[in-house]
Image (cartoon, rainbow, N blue to C red; front, side, top):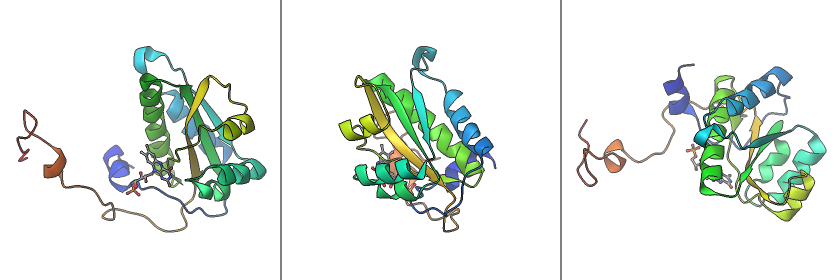
Length: 169
Ligand SMILES: Cc1cc2nc3c(=O)[nH]c(=O)nc-3n(C[C@H](O)[C@H](O)[C@H](O)COP(=O)(O)O)c2cc1C
């Protein structure tokens, strides 16, 4: 899959088949995170790969905006320093992991609001670190493809030379 096609078709996937993700694919997703560039190449992140069903179920209970983590085959918690650079570096790694997974037919989504004491305790995350997101992964139950993304038109978000001047292509 071409990079641009992956970007064109990637969607938030919240329903997953009851199908395990091969270990090599899990490793490849984690590799995509590891290989991401970070500010000053600090790589100050940790990716916790969760595949145990009991933990996934518990995460689904604790994540107020991501109960569907319970059905995922894999969830990766992204742990970063609680700072703007931490958020930016972590978000870049997440996008690379999501795209690498998508190329293998694996859907995912960003679940926020997970930096809670209960989730940190469950995953043994040190108190001074932040769980930026937990990303559940799994094979989508429905076929997803081009043309169903709902996004603003390019003219609404792209400007020419300076803010407010429409980009005309
Ligand atoms: C920073 C951020 C936080 C998000 N938090 C959640 C969340 O807590 N739960 C959820 O189901 N989706 C969450 N999403 C997913 C967005 O709802 C999704 O990316 C957006 O609606 C576009 O979806 P689409 O690509 O399927 O069109 C989050 C996305 C981002 C980038």
